[in-house]
Length: 262
Image (cartoon, rainbow, N blue to C red):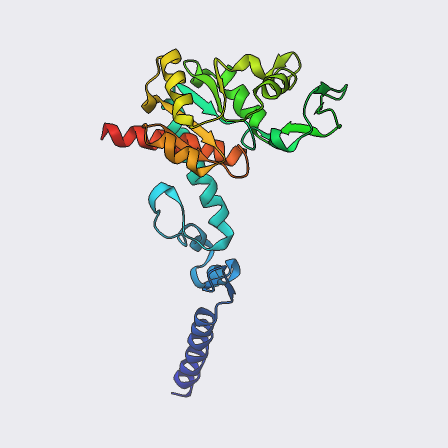
């Protein structure tokens, strides 16, 4: 009888300790102010095999909701999925603004011609100020110019700067890579002041590409609104055509084309 009592007491102590470990899992605070179990806490709760079972059901885009530690990974997966989906759906014509979309500063902010290219490849105006492409622009232009999935895609410029001569001079000096000038990768160039609806009218007439097969990158929202009414997929890029904006724009174009098919 005494032995049964001792065994019963030990069993109660053991169960109490296990329950305590279950309910006092260490927590951390996420960016949303919610508490989530730490990795060690999850292991205490679920054992060695719990790691593979701790993830919630996948949401749209395959993002796994397991807290802040995997939130960035989930975003990468979503971006990767979007990029893969857009591989087979690309625009036939990529149209870009110049000032503060492809390069900075804007031409009107500079002292002007003559522009010169130094030995280090930098292009400067007459005062010595450098004009250069935004990070990611070279990669985007080369991707369209040489990329296999863009083999049927052309590039165009739609700029409303009043300094057309300066713009063409700079495009003739900036190299995307040794021996490849920026101006040489563009099939159509429209540079003059006024509404960009006119620019796109000329681009469509010369390229024979429907508006629905074009994508347009510009830093000014009004230009995007005007051109968007034509049926062009427009992407506003207030920080220039950085890689993130380029990828997002291609995904937006692909999504628009998919919606028309469904």
